[in-house]
Amino acid sequence: MKPLSIHDVHREGVELTLQSLLAYWKQHEHYAVAWSAGKDSTTLLTLIVHLVQAGHLPKPKKLYVFYADTRQELPPIQLAAEQIIAKLSELDWIEVIVVRAPLDKRFMVYILGRGVPPPNNNTLRWCTRQIKVEPMAAALETALEQLPGTALMLTGVREGESAIRDGRIAMSCSKDGAECGQGWYQQVLPEAKGIKGRIATLAPLLHWRVCWIWDWLKVWAPMPEFGGWPTQILADAYGGDEAEEINARTGCIGCPLAARDTALETIVAMPTWAHLSPLLELKPLYRWMRKPEQRLRKRGVERLKDGSIAKNPQRMGPLTLEARSQALEQVLDIQRRAGVDLINGEEEARIRELIEAKTYPDKWTGDEPRADLWLDAVYSDGSVQPILFRELVS
Ligand code: SF4
Image (cartoon, rainbow, N blue to C red; front, top):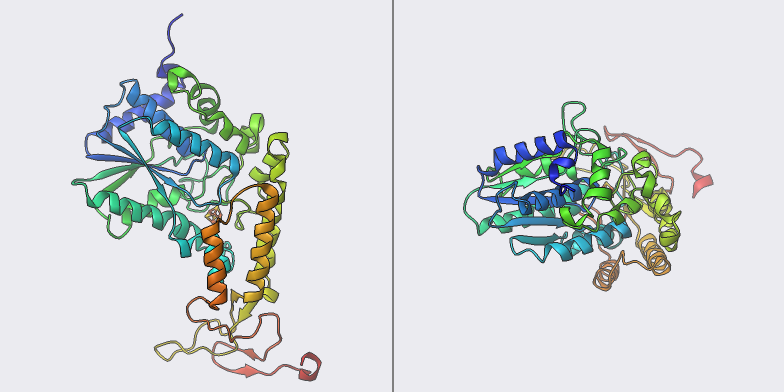
């Protein structure tokens, strides 16, 4: 029987990917992959390694793999990532760089230690940039500092899902099937301070359909001919045999920006992962934290440096210290019951230290009233309407 070759795998799709890679390969001195360990960027990474090993792409002196570890990934994704990293480390031309936000900016430390409420889709979308894009830009900058020339950053962005439908690369991860952060890498990274002009991005899977992705991850990539990658486990995170239909998005466990955590709901329905069901309590906990009872509110008119009045005079702000302590205990309890590590020892110690030190975000002191208390209404022009029936609320 004729040995299998890459041309047996969705011929047109792979051919186009190869052509786009070849067209840019010679224009750069260094190559890197922005890898989130989700399905698209894992397909890209394993495919590139195969293309090099099979002689379709020239072997680079070094391929840098930047793994964005948010510490909030779904356990099957985390496990697959660890196994893939172990395989990659056998290759001397690949360097895996694990990228994490600095301690104080990590998801749990920022929320529970500093008191910034969990992100939402409106005014408080701080997370992707802070826990993924900025650490990635910083890691790239460090790597590029020591290297001459330009780098080509490869991303797993595809057009089919979160990508360029309306003429721009969607940067939200709220849509089904997307991997949080991938559009940001494509669009924001090249502009990042320190690497601007020295990095170009390319999305070689832009034209791939989701069924090709699954064929690669479930059928081809695990075959010895294509590298024997442990990618089947990833399918669990997306719904096992029904991954394609369920089309779950991935990102942080209990992502507060997604209406439902389809990936987690699907995983815990499988006997192998049923022990993770306490993680379902995270999403309601994030919702609880965003309520006025758990937060502070500006009392009234806030003067800005230039003397003008801030737009939203009584805006809600950070979490109270009590709410943070309570939520910390709940997360620790959830992770103990689920047998995972969302907050490690170092992070827990830092959170407790920040709470102890009464740390608040900039422009907040902790002396503000709790956001569920009734206050005189203050309007953006500075006028005040006293509470009616004050005696009823005092
Ligand atoms: S998955 Fe959700 S919480 Fe995590 S970085 Fe993306 S948007 Fe933020």
